[in-house]
Image (cartoon, rainbow, N blue to C red; front, side):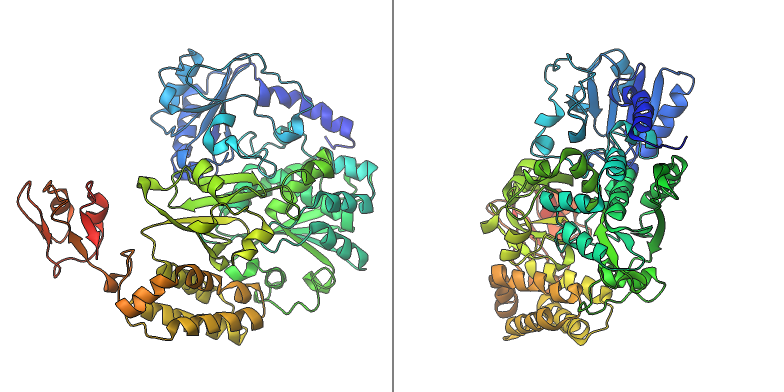
Length: 635
């Protein structure tokens, strides 16, 4: 069936609403994003399907990621008139047991495995629908998902459907008001009015630069010729996977956002540039595009109008620099992915020398929600100059790793301690890096900083695409700077001298410092190199590359000085600059460290203080991590 109107869309969606909200039988949704699969969800899915293949009343489905990656695999079970439960750590050996206990309404048996009870899984777009599962009260001792600390401060817009629908069934997207915003815009809204709505919402690009989306769209629409829409899904920051999860969990939201942008600027052709390392995202995008074409929502004369739009997928080879807009377009044209100077903007001459609008995955995913709920609704969240929400990948030395979507302006402390659950093993927080390898390292003194585009820039960091890496007391900030510079050196296109030579020289100096060969003047040289790179590099990679170095010097200069002057690495990371010693007053002689030492470098009698043979010790850290009495010290 080809959809011709909103009425057609509603007819299809109504038959699928019950499957999402209150199915007649039992529905089991298993989180099958990359994080869930890596934790064992595929085996759990296969076993459930095999076990219940003869039972038509039990439906086993896949969903995307609802964000709490630390607790994967996650499984949601629901049925009409029963509570919706989300279970954690459900692998192959547990899946049948929890389904059977749910059927028996025995929630106490697996109380520890229940992450929470869904009060209502509907997205923010569905608040005009009646709750079809209303009237079910809380179960004693099992919290509602909204009350679980990881979720309590989150507001999901870009990730509104992730984990709640099957990403490979377009009909479930329809049931969540999918494509309603596009059809409404197609039939009832002028292109200039679409741009006005996006402008009033205050939506800024979520790919890193934070440029107002509506200004890009309006400028692109002014120029003549073939206009192109490009989605940047070349997510290459270490530890970042926001875009991947949206594509894996809700690909149609991105396609719909691109369609609306195409309407606004008058484009007939779109491209999604996604890295080849995201095979599941690519697979689900291919499926989503075919489904949209089958329903007449992509292709020629969409919904009986003269508007036509097609989307193609291009897979990148993994070059980090191709996340930069002009390098991406060059790669898309089949050329070497190298940035160009931006005195001519891509909205004027971009892909194939034509006007081109480029936004990232998260930006497009926000657009349908803005058109359905209105600009004022979206602008009502966030700060004065950073509206709406932002998705972050919270990783590193943090208890609750995962994806979080929070209103702009939330503090770093809220994200790290209230949502992230703080630092493991009660260790001390040292810094958080935002914005990927080109972001800055933010120290403890700024934990109450509101997170938005402008505030992060003030302390030397950037929003970037949304990576957030937490570091504890055992992190060496000099080594962190060295690591990111090493990454960026390899990813630099090498086209301009400041970036190519600057990164190489920075890495040489940082490596010497970490190896104990640092000398007076090295810090000042790093600062000078960083300043020159920021001023004279060709593209954003080069201008932002010094951020990890400059912010770590600014806030942790004492660590650099200790490495250079005292030849000490107080964090115990740079092996040439520290050794382990056992505190005789604290050691209980439990012999755990001696048993774990791979070099047999630790000796001592039982219940008496032990000692480390420094000649045998390889500084692997096994004894340090394994000591329950904190008797092993870094010296």
